[in-house]
Image 1 (cartoon, rainbow, N blue to C red):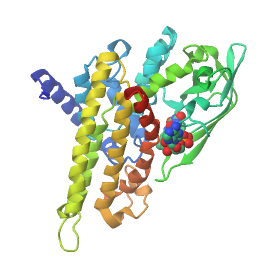
Image 2 (spheres, rainbow, N blue to C red):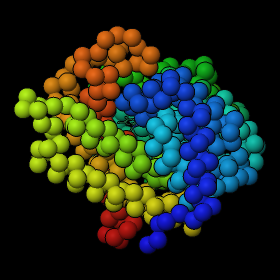
Image 3 (cartoon, helix red, strand yellow):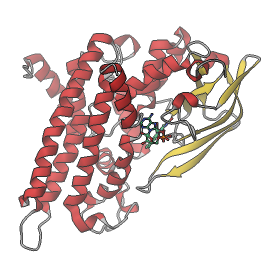
Image 4 (spheres, rainbow, N blue to C red):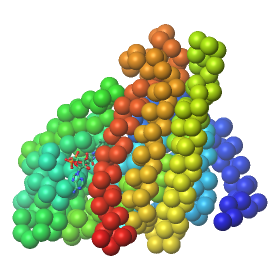
Length: 401
Ligand SMILES: Cc1cc2nc3c(=O)[nH]c(=O)nc-3n(C[C@H](O)[C@H](O)[C@H](O)COP(=O)(O)OP(=O)(O)OC[C@H]3O[C@@H](n4cnc5c(N)ncnc54)[C@H](O)[C@@H]3O)c2cc1C
């Protein structure tokens, strides 16, 4: 396979590189570097969103008619790689990567005209109301119900593990509208505003000490029927379509490459009592080399998913393969980084790793996030559909088992 870039693409790459170098403030860079969850500290995430929006590059994967930059699949990949290389903050995926494509695919003309520009501008932040206590992998068993009353649905129930519900002003949500037939056949896809009376958001703190997700309670929450995407009881189709975007279409390999380079640097920097670096230890060096190779395989799987998007408009089953391999490698890399900093992994110093903190850390400042990232990364094989479920999908859809 010829993977050399043409002159045009090389020029594009330089344009992106220059823009990123000129636009990233030290504060945004630091927030991204210290990030231990999906996206960095909220202020920095939104500041970066605004910069990309003003440049017209906030939604690289969107079609031009909806405000995307009109890039082809290779340009999108180059952009994602350059972003990872420059250490830009990851963007919150709720609107841009999840509900945005779902509205494009299944929304009405009015919904497209209203919601898509607001996602681009950052005016709307979306959270995902899928999981419930007792309905995670078996999502179709969800019980949060919506009953028709006049022009509205009235929602009662709860959602759990709702990332960023404490920042989001909107939620896309799966609700039960019928108990007839198969569980999948009674689900409806709704869009709602988080300040609607009857919604309560309670924080859940994760193992690394961060507040990323929440439990959300609904008591007699009224949502206009016009906020439905697709037909009543046909929300499962929209939900499945959206999940493919959640599991693919991203530049995971490039981001993890940055983490692996960081682990290598940390291992080189720390000297043991005999003056040698960890990198000189055959066991560590072999694990590092093996992860570098595995990351290459993730990168090529990513290219396959991109090719699928270019051909069919969505990543298809390649997204399950990518999600599984990419998260396995991600978890192994954060474990290697922990090994690299050895005893300095032990102190728990959440305040020191806030961007702009002036507290004196134990150990080096760039080691502060390693442990929290390792702990939070344990969730990578669970969120966006657990890796066991991805294997079930591959067995059925790819192998025909
Ligand atoms: C960090 C994080 C962020 C999240 N953010 C959101 C969010 O914003 N919105 C949202 O709706 N949800 C969110 N989730 C929830 C996530 O989608 C669920 O945790 C996930 O789908 C698994 O569901 P569960 O936790 O109920 O586990 P369960 O479904 O109870 O699974 C428990 C274990 O059993 C295994 N298992 C279950 N069924 C099978 C099977 N059929 N075959 C083989 N193995 C099986 C699973 O792989 C897992 O290991 C988030 C989760 C995490 C960890």
